[in-house]
Image 1 (spheres, rainbow, N blue to C red):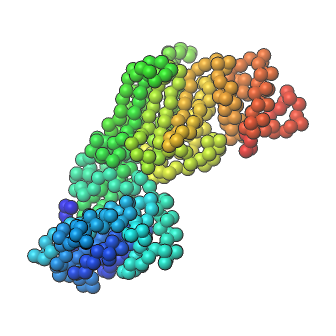
Image 2 (image 1 turned 180 degrees about the vertical axis):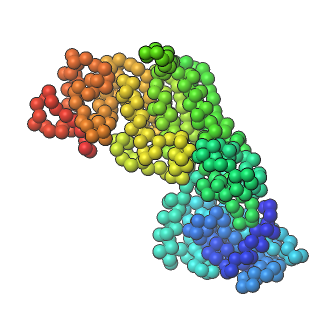
Image 3 (image 1 turned 90 degrees about the vertical axis):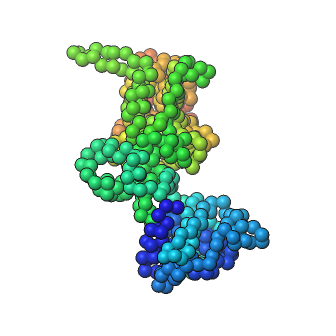
Length: 482
């Protein structure tokens, strides 16, 4: 590790040992180390620290450099190298490394322990925690145990590290930070330290304990000049595939993103728009280009796929597939909101920091109005309703091009009926036979067919009458939850 001496000196300045920092002299009994790795990993997660440290060769009270006889490479446990033995006894999520440095001519050994992720780190199938400067079993401290699990459940991909041990100028070289200031309308500071200040405030860049810097997964995802510089997240790039027909038999074009989302989002929207059928319409004195799909709906759907993807699903990222009759946008994971309440429920995201920053960067709608805009823009263009399908480990949203109402499947007609009722409800209105006919540009002659559709939607418990005693001609309908 670079700047190990600086790290030790910074930690020596701590007034006392903490729940994520322990100093030792020559005590290096293997079981003690295993228990402390568990305890320090769990305690650093609880304290929201990226790493914890155990350092040999430092006096635990004065913090003076006294050196140590401990040699992590020659110490054996039952004929096995100690580090290898520790890894067999610790849970799979234990992440640690030993290093050493000469300071004032004396040997100092540093054990760097990454914080626990997703579940507590255990040693010999037992979980440990630090209480002050003491290591205790987690099961003996139920309050700490509950706090730790709450923290682990809320731990998110955005805050994890994509690249660490960077000098300030190195971290900025990997990111296109100028677009951050341009979009937010903030004057770019003239100094590296000034730029780092803003980047650190938004958790894009993180200051390490050794004086160096890390780039968070969120920072890399949004601002990376080259995603290939960050192997852990490069598979999360946007991928666009255009097919020749309405199936996946022949690919016409394929494009995979190579930069952060902020840098490529508008570029990809323009790229997709250029692939779509369009026509020029003259309205009055103006010539207007109209595409087969509302660009606002496309933009919001793709932004939702980026924001709400489940980053714990490895090896998969957002995919936009363009067919002759539809566009499918797929992202890893399932929405946290019930899809039947996608219009009216407040937004929820497993990636809150990413969602918040993307909204500030004007990549998506505020206050969860994205799905309202998607549904309303499709209705305004008199297109079939956007469909949401859940698969094992992924969510797919399908936008359909214009088609005759008679060619829309019955299930999609029911879904369109339900979404129309939802849109009307959030607008303070109610769905009627006439409003649904207007939504699809249908004549009065099909009103009987629309009434039959309403009956099926009521039977499926998708909608309900506002007043069941009203005559059929004046009947109004609400979504089932209205």
